[in-house]
Image 1: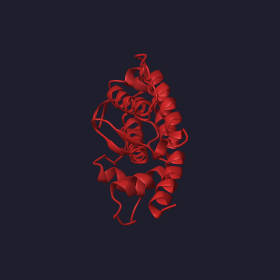
Image 2: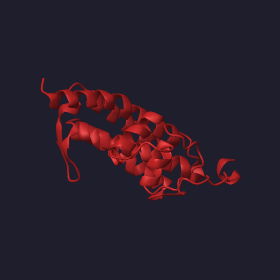
Image 3: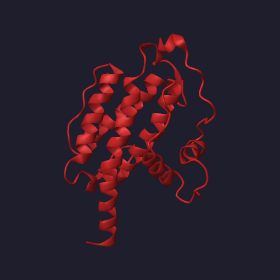
Image 4: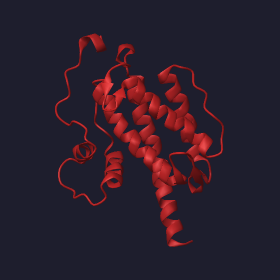
Length: 184
């Protein structure tokens, strides 16, 4: 086995552990979105738009890896669960991360696409938690992975989650007080 193949295999094993964790973390926040929080603003639109973007990204995974489409129901929470389950299964299939995939916005190794989705999910988890006044603490291993991908040359000073969010332009100040109308 070449050095390149060995590195890719190790990276694949790491992603088969981290990607499902990122999916689950985002999913827990989706489940806690109150009925009247779907229109709340996030860093890039509304809570509904954020969840729909991440759902669409996960729903594409089975198709990109040679599987079928994931049908939408119109319920953002149910659609998320369905797409997340299908994407996890598609990436976990034997040899899936060794494939090359191509689409209008990504061409390359599936392992790289999985890494990008893992970072995207990690940051989106914080965006969703922040917008809906949920716990914004991210899993340290997801933060470390995302920080290494976003800024591999960054030094190790300070809180890693704060460094990651600062690098991505996310506000890291105090979270707004929960609105009793939203959580009531």
